Each structure stands twice: as structure tokens, then as C-alpha cells.
Length: 195
Image (cartoon, rainbow, N blue to C red):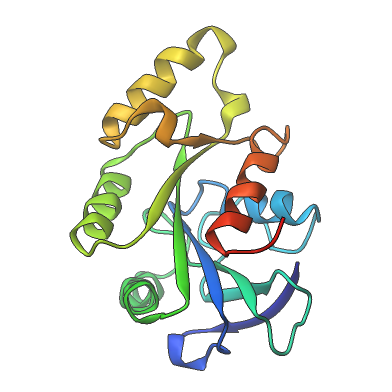
């Protein structure tokens, strides 16, 4: 996987055959998950300060950085972010335009913090995606932050909060590589790539 470009407008992105987009709260671990999927430490910039992703960031899966055929797209996070309100206010229309206008969008990964979610904002995002019949999968991050004795109960609670079955959610930990290989396999399936 390689970085291709950043944009504020979906129209400025290069055309691709298929893409997987990543959405979630500002501190849910989007960049860490992308780095884990790419098996690279600093491909997507991580930060302890929520809100560092402020643009639509496109990463090529096939390393053809100028004309990628299959891509990952990292979108700005919603919710608390340490950025000016004016900047954050511009994110919603940018994210919505990408999610509704991008013809090559094959799947939206909705990242939910496994230790605390789903939050009200996560539920609103899921309801909005469902209302538009946009393809999406819930990915619970930070599996390692949930104590082993509480994981089964937490998985049930999170699924109910998302109005899904427990098995519909992919649990991951970027730092411990939990669920990463499964997510790679799913990505290949969503993008119709040969295994």
C-alpha cells in the first residue's frame, strides 16, 4: 500500500476501479488500523491529538501511486477533534459528498471503539448509511483494551448498540494484530481482488 494524494473535494481524486473507505470518530484509531493493514508503521500519520486527518486521503493497494486501480480512503474523523470549529464544520459536507458521490466505493468500514462504543455519533453514522443503503461493515477497534473476562459481554453490547448480530462485527487490535488478517481477506473480497 502506498500514499497517493489528499483532497478536499471528491472530484479531485483520481479514478479507481474500487475503493474501501474508513470512517469513525476522531480518536478511534483509523490511521493505526490502516498502518496495520498495510503492515507499515508510518504510512498513515498517527497522533495522540484527535483530528489530525483533515483531508480525504487516498492510498493505493497496488502501489501504482499515479493511477491506482484499487484504493483505501481515510476520511476525517467525526466527533471531538482538536481543530478549529470552522475546519471541523467543513468535514461533514466533504465526507458526505465522498460517500454519496464516489462511484467506485465498494465498502465503508465504520470504525467503532471496542472499549467505549458505539457512541451517539457512531449510531447516527450507521443510521445515515442505512438510510442511503450504502454498503458498510462495522469494525470494532482496540480489542486489546477490553479485559479478556469482559470481551464476550462487550461484543454483545456493542453489536446490540449497532443493531447488528455479534458475528457481523469484525473485532481488531492494530497494536496486537488481532483481526487484521481477517480484515485483509475481507478487503480483497470487497475489492474483488484475486487472493
